[in-house]
Every structure is written in C-alpha cells, then in structure tokens.
Image (cartoon, rainbow, N blue to C red; front, side, top):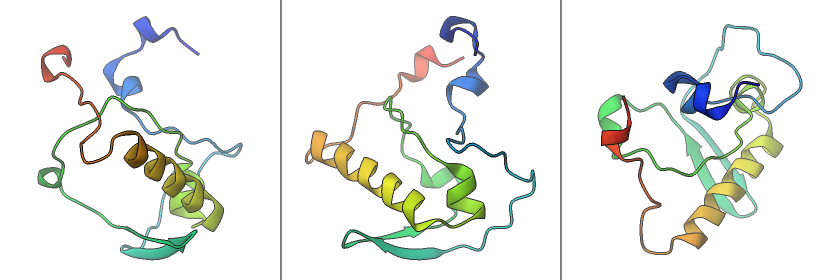
Length: 104
C-alpha cells in the first residue's frame, strides 16, 4: 500500500473491492436493481455524469464484486447501513464536499 501523499488522483477516488477475491475483469450488470435492506428500499441504477451534484469527502468501504457481480444481499445491506449512517450524521444537509480547487 502506498502512502496517501504518494497516491495519484485515480487512487484517491477509486472504488476498491473489500472482498477477498478479485473480480473477473468483465462485469455483467443489469440495471436497475431493486431491493430491500432492513425495511429500507433501494435501487442500484446507472447515471450519467450530469446526474452528480458533487463528490463528498466521506469514504465508504464498498465491495464492488459482491454488489455488482454476485448481487449479494449482505453487501447491499452493509452499503445501505453506511449510507443511512451518513444521512443520520448530516440531517437535512449534504455531507461536506471535496474542494474543486484542490483537485488537479
């Protein structure tokens, strides 16, 4: 693992798998995907670049292999729990955004 100061921008904002196995390199995903976790409904869907308002400073552990390839209910549940915690930590507001001037 490289030091945070030596990592490139692509390492800073990439989504890293949390699982122990690597993906196949080819992901076959059918969107939208609807589900429920702990009584909370969610949808996983594709969005274009215009669908993003900002990038927040908070980091989450996301298991991309189990979410996208395996469609694991446990992985979705963990991700939904993390998002609900962020919503609880920042009621009625957005989490802090990345300063666009600091991004090269």
